[in-house]
Length: 327
Image (cartoon, rainbow, N blue to C red; front, side, top):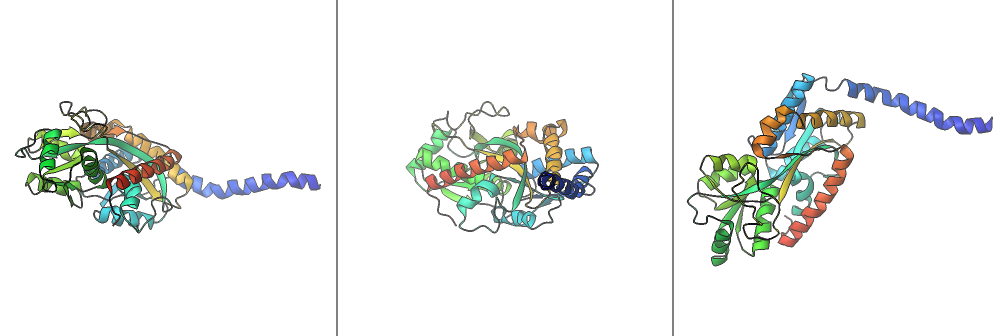
């Protein structure tokens, strides 16, 4: 009898656990039953905003439930990140973000008002890509090395703007690898930095293709390099910064989705299924991925967690090598 109980107890415990999971499974099977809110840490029109809208539209087409885009720009993504970290953990509030909030900020700031690991449940990666180095058509440099030569002649005279950690780190890495000194001008978003670049208030920026390339195609900005390992299929005539003369240069960015930390695993799994399918849909490809040259990049929640750890280490090395003091 004693032996029977010894084996029966684990079975009973498993049965209890199975019963306790039933409400969560039922919740996930019916998810979503109302509108989902995508919180975006950057302004409308930015690449992160664009991918959020593309994914949201695809999910709405699939589930017939609306997806609301809530842009909470500013403070290096702090506002949006805090908002989601404190939101109800029911799957109806999702952070659509980038390496800025979940890999770079912890190395750029002495204290964060959120924990990029403990406060969130990773859902999936959504995409990745390179950036484009742009200047005004009136700027005297027509190539990366001409820009480098000017910067070496007058250290600190020329400026670069950035509205995201990816954009800033791209500029910092260029300074480090080309041995030049530039003045960094921070912005709340890359779109605001582009506006000042168009007005000749700053001299250069390295921004996401979704923000910079339309201005290049319109003839309002000149592209002199791309930050990735290979040329962009949307601008094959523009060399990589590495092949233009800064050997070994490479800098990219990624997008990902996160739920509040205590979101039930079954709901996270359902969100993952919806978002992966949305990212791979023809709707999202036509609306965002193909026009911006962004690569579709999706993961399981577990893979996203591991990817984030590796990216945080990488960004930490870049920040340290650039000699940036945490603010």
